[in-house]
Amino acid sequence: MTARDVILARVAEGLRDVPTGELADDIDVPRDYFRTVEGDAVERFIERISAYKTTVKRVAPADLAQRSAEQLRSRGLGRIAIPPDLPDEWLPSGVKLLSSALDVQALDAVDGALTGCALAIAETGTIVLDGGARQGRRALSLVPDYHLCIVDEQQIVGTVPEAIDLIAASVRRMLRPVTFISGPSATSDIELARVEGVHGPRTLDVLVVSPA
Image (cartoon, rainbow, N blue to C red; front, side, top):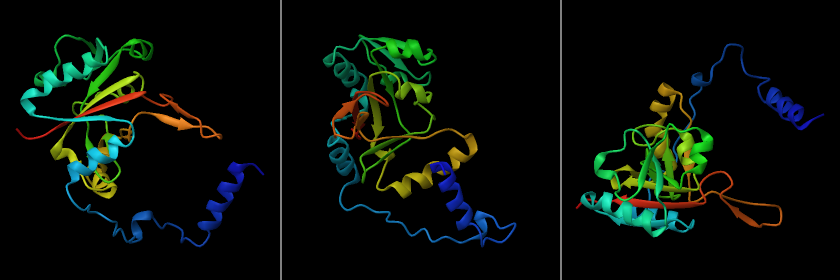
């Protein structure tokens, strides 16, 4: 038997005693997940995502465009793809801003991408993208080798269950894929040799927008 056959056989065995016509929603499943974090959620998020080799800086709303430009210039990046609905007050000067509608080959040739996010999770240091406002299409955060992500403090929740509760309705309605980003893309082979930039950007910078 192939691995696929084994898995399907186990699924069939697990469903053997399920009554005909029974649906998943007919069963009440307890979902008393851990939903709180101790201390400041924003500080926890910054601490956790920084541990993944992510550069994180806190900025005031009025300084966002300037600080974005400074971050891009510090890395020598001049051609940046952005979503079509990125706010004017976010747009950095001194760099060439390109449409996110580029094909994959053109996206691969830009220096990086600048986007917002749907949510961020403090407990795991994770950014959540669902293709909504200020995020652009999924390829924008996966193809370029660099990603600068803007996270508003109010978008940071404590735990994964909180995040899932908030995005579930939009995901079901829009049928869009969700991307969870915990630091730059990295993987390890069987000898634990770390390789970065395999499944997404090699470098991730985050600007956390704090109230003035």
